[in-house]
Image: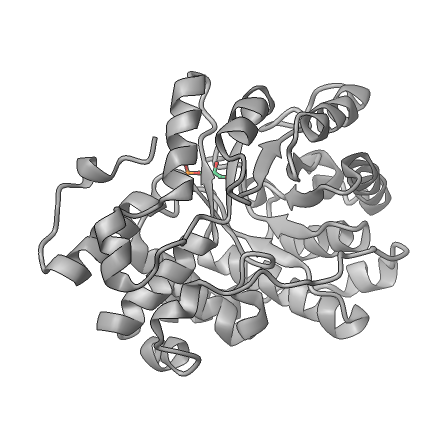
Length: 335
Ligand SMILES: O=C[C@H](O)COP(=O)(O)O
């Protein structure tokens, strides 16, 4: 049961205030085409397993509150809109620094809780870096011609460099979907390696845009190739595809991460993104990670939610936990 899965690590209130891990970065490896060719995804088994996840008994009371706080610590609080302004980004950063009302945090014993990162377009990186100064919260930039990733290759590399120079500590790159759709694994590997090199010390999340990859088998293969080329995280979606993060896709990517760890000893992070807006969905993802990968992955250095509106619903649930009353969702707008 989900409640047992999440309850057996800790019900303590400091569950979310865990120190950042010190996981070595993924150095990558040579492209292993045999491994890629052998990657399989059994759609019906995956869909059966995914369908069984949300229906489980939900977590209650202190356990739920603790795991919702853990979820907050793993959010890349995101705004990726054409009408983003400096003011909106500054408000988002204030929310990242204090994601839940102070009195609620105090009642939960969670003072100091922050989101995992703030995620913005390149043009907003400097504003976010300034607004987050001293907080320790990293800024993630979506680069490489996000969301389609079809600008000239040298410009995509230059964009990464500019985002890093502006202070981004994490770069979310988008892969060329056509390399996957045409089975050109060498091209995908070379592209990912170049992106990783351009990131330097900044951690790189590879966005697969799984809704555009055609099959779960392609998702499995693309996950492996990006990890072989040195991705620190693999991420489902830009949030702009017609289908974004789903549980079946997550299972496939998480199992690729598990395989990669078993063969190389390296832990690669996972970021489902797009359309995750409800606290109960966040709990399903956390239990899935715990079951498939184990506790070590339930830390912000190895797990993130890419989400613009999830925090509002979590805050609402936490307010209910503390006060017994629900407030209107508009009271918890993120930006
Ligand atoms: O990477 C993050 C996504 O763009 C956020 O998507 P969302 O607005 O559906 O939460």
